[in-house]
Image (tube, rainbow, N blue to C red; front, side, top):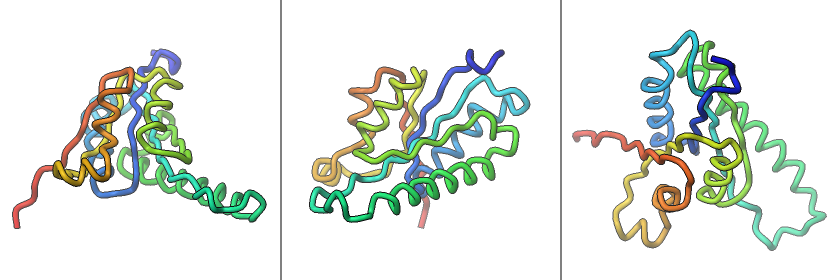
Length: 157
């Protein structure tokens, strides 16, 4: 199967234990069975919050932000390669963008015409979800592809 024929899986990644678990889940279920020739391409997306409007345009912060975004992308790619092996390296793309995660994820799904969007669940209760908003809930209703929410099993104390 040629690279252009591979289906795309987009996954949100924020370096939390929830997104690391979701990435591990993706690698085990969608890439391990096809280790030598994966049938999917993985696009890992990290959304950084936008700079506050109070930051002046000529403040010189933008070059530092760009450098920071490149460092984050390199760290995410390295984490994916460590978890998935070198075979995965040619099938993973990392995009670091500024903006609201829910909007960024839906935009990347459209951009790559993804077959699936995978997000980790932070496990917030109804009150926290109402106050903070839920990226996964927004994506379920607005992404134009299958959305899979990967929840970590509850640990026993």
